[in-house]
Amino acid sequence: MQFSGIIGQNAVKERLIRTVKDNRISHAQLFLGPEGSGKLALAVAYAQFINCTGRSAESTDSCGTCPSCHKYNQLAHPDLHFIYPVATTSDVPRKPTSKDFIAKWRKLLLERKSYIKLANWYDTIGIENKQGIINAEDCNEIIKT
Image 1 (cartoon, rainbow, N blue to C red):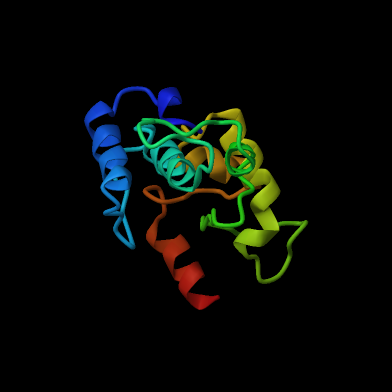
Image 2 (tube, rainbow, N blue to C red):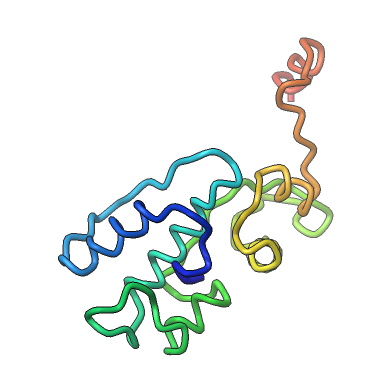
């Protein structure tokens, strides 16, 4: 994912590029916004830009062709880690972790170019999202188990 593939967010992109050029990258950053705003795509593009080995000092985007960029384009770079909601399924009946679902996660992100909603992920792995429609009886059932 490159900055050029992200719609809008120009001021944010410029600020992120400036942090790299000024060698002032914070140890932790939070990308926050409404669903579908491109915050995940922006975070991946930023990580790719930081780790790109083929960009020039004047460049405002990653090269897209170096080994690091190829790994980021497949969402398989060793320094790129995802944490997302998981649940038990028929494939993973006990103690699910993010590693158990990484192939499905990558596929969903690549198909939708990182512009996804949490509901899309829930549908992909078969989680029923009852948030907002749960009643007192269902609540008591959850508490008992």
